[in-house]
Amino acid sequence: MSRLIRSPSFPFISLREAIERARLLYDAVRRSPASVEAAVETWGYSSKSSGGKQTIAALRAFGLLEGEGSVRLTDRAVHILLNDDSPERDRLLRQAALSPPVYARLWERYGPDLPSDKGLQTHLILEMGFNENAVADVIRGYKETLDFTKMRKPAAPPDLRTQPAPPPPSDLSLGFPLLNDNRVDFRVLRKIDPAEADQVRTLFAIWLEKITARS
Image 1 (cartoon, rainbow, N blue to C red):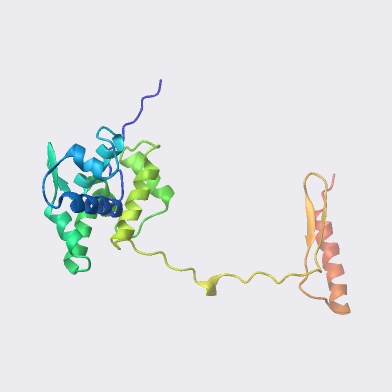
Image 2: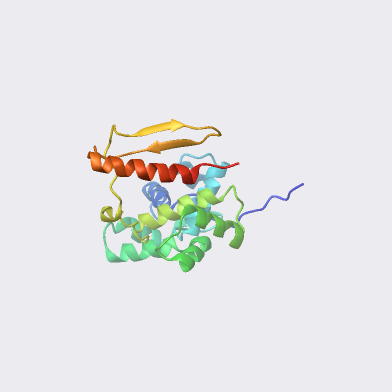
């Protein structure tokens, strides 16, 4: 029987979602302590639901919530909520983004230039010990968090100058099947003059001789 690999801890939700949950809690109780049961009810969870517990854990991981028996928003969370557009808020958001240990390790390794999802998946499984079933959620949450805080370098748009132009459509093509799933295709962009036709006949005869199998 194969042993189930338990993944390291990672946030259940992205930082953007965690800020939204923090705002709901702030609207309900401001900075006053609240029981865990009361906190999760503000997010629409029952007191014993796994979603509520995971949300509490995610806000703690981002440094937005503190306390055990009762919980309250941290100074970081309140500053983020009350300063909608300021350099200080941006700094605090970046601090929050890298507070979860798994996010800090990924940032230390890759910085703003992320590899492909396949590369991240391989690193998470082989180097960080994540279960294969968890890596998609880790990658989604991490990328959303970096995008929310503008920490990820945007992908460069393709340089259209380097892209080969597709051939124009033509009705001068010819193709027909051969044995053993083989086929021959000919394509010409425009009609040719008689002198070129003679050259093509010669080249075709040479090419046909070369590709014909001899017993």
